[in-house]
Image 1 (cartoon, rainbow, N blue to C red):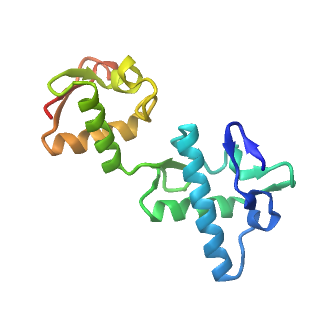
Image 2 (cartoon, rainbow, N blue to C red; image 1 turned 90 degrees about the vertical axis):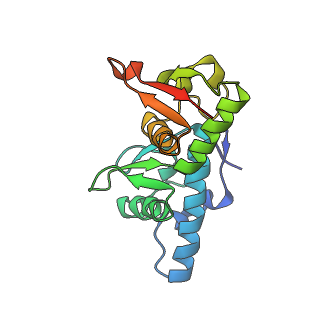
Length: 179
């Protein structure tokens, strides 16, 4: 079984036809499903939030079989993930994709659990502390993409679970939990 860093790759990754968009509808649907799962699993395991369609992304090529995904295949697979609400295009040209291996609501739930687990129910933290503070070390919140974190925090603010406040810089943005 081939590995990419500490990630175990599925069998199909070594099968050359899976690096070419399949013309038969049923085969293509299976291919797209396999690639969606692979991309989401890989991004979650490696804590990757952004994929550039035109950039070097480890899954988009396999040197062992001398195959790479075409631009069209990359965009097709990422668009399928976008279609499920598990990613979003960051530009109209579909060059950058924000991967949501957890949906925003799921991230909000993870934040609430983090608050409860650490006894932070009526505490104040900076946004950066949530991403890189001692409490977040070893959790899924460690190094979370700032855009995703802010969207989850805004969702919780709309539900009355916290209040966001701005300081003099982006590093000073704060969160007052009221769980």
